[in-house]
Amino acid sequence: MRLEIPMKNVMLSTLALALSLYTNAGPTQKASKAPRVSHEDEEANIKDTSHLVKFISEILTLASCGNEELLVQIKRLSCTNCELRDIPSEFFHLSGLEELILNNNNLCYVTPNIAKFKSLKILDLSNNRIKELPETIGEMRSLIDINLSNNFLEKLPNKIANLRQLERLTVRHNTLKKLPSGFSKLKQLQYLDIR
Image (tube, rainbow, N blue to C red; front, side, top):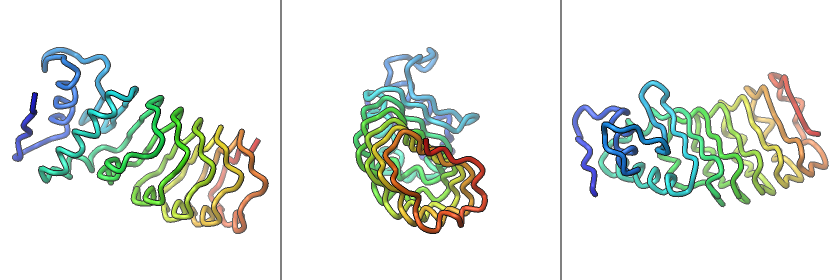
């Protein structure tokens, strides 16, 4: 089934309807396992790999139709337990994201492109297999909360000291040997967990 998305007056609720149609529930039925994208919440919650594939397909469809304004409206994206090994490049179309939750996956690598999320305030990469972070994370100046717990990090990038708005940094249950130089520049930091 191909879903045609009207080009005129497209709203985020259209995206929610489009996503629910992929779950074999009719537009009048509630789709219990559909990714949740709504105008009120401005968020997408994806809880398994099959819905992730459908969501990515929908992102590409909207982007190719010139409907980037819909994608910018999504402020929160949660992909938990989706067996991700890396961050799908399609996610970078969601340039208005303020919260990205990718915990409990199989991420080993974080692309330097993560810095494209200029509006991101909360980043949760906990419970993955990440061994190192790119220096470009220091370009994400809006970040206020980072959770990197339960990974395999031995060090943090030096450029993390550029995150002057950072208030919370959780890196417990890693193998950190030392904090990066310039760490004392994080004057807004109120919570640090390195146990």
